[in-house]
Image: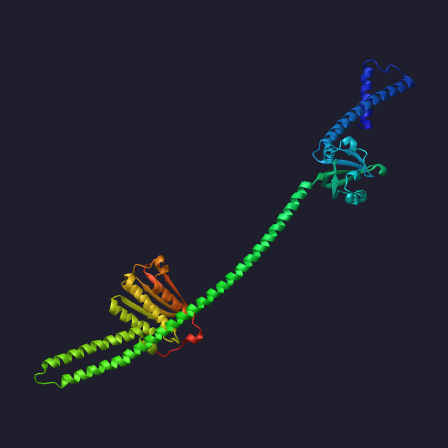
Length: 447
């Protein structure tokens, strides 16, 4: 309570006392004023004493609470003087060192620090008084039976008016278990890193071996592709030679036979009617053989492909397919100015032939639409039928040798094949080729 408030309260009590007839209110003059002041001062002293007793009770209560909190705290608390002597220690601190709290009071803390770490504690003590704020240190301590354990100490200076009486308070935590776990974790991590390094080395070796194996497989695949290309080349060369041989040699021989049989028919008379009929039959059969030879020679290697180009060959094949199967075949072409060099033309033609063969065998179609176009520098061949449509399993079936052959031929010249089932039904075969310049030229005539 402030002094003015205390004075007013004393005067209030004095007036109350005078009203009751117990005070010096009947006195007059200077003596009465002195008596009045003395009685007021006496009341004021009583109030001050009562207030001091209340303060003392609260202080004692707070101190008791503080001592309880300090003593029963779950962590170890120490209080040191400037020399590092223990002035206070709670129960947790006593249990940590294995010594009673009373026995700790007045002993130097250095007794419980392992000798190699005592200089660390001195430096820590010096830093506390030199710097403000919390100071931290890790050091090894000894308990009563001499067992060494690792601890961390966090200290803070307690300021006092008398520097000589200043002290500092520390919280000490046993971190032996934490350190052991940390070392175990570090060892485990090191072991794991070693295992990872070993495994990484194994994986690197495995990857290197796998890379070599992949490279070997790629070489084998390139070899197989080269072999397939060579086989296709040899097959086409043989077909070309066989077609020419049948057309030139067999065809000429059959024409000669026909001419001779016709000559015999023209020079027979009299009773040779039977011979004439036989000769005419020979001429007729010879005509049939000539037509068959032409058809076989054309199927082996259509002369129109070499003479007029890929567009004319596809158009010719469309007419032949329609005659043979009765399936209507339409052809759209915008490549009048294009000519293909090398094996590109024959491979595209064989892809088209295989598409028609698959339609005739499996599609149950009544109509085929074929287009050969050049768009954005790409050659695009599309063959679309209105049949039952190809299934995904059929296109991917390993036994689909015709489709596999088409893809191989497309790959030989750097093209690609897509076989899909459009929403409208049927099957669409799309061949796309982005030809290098050495495969393309211009032609004055394409039929």
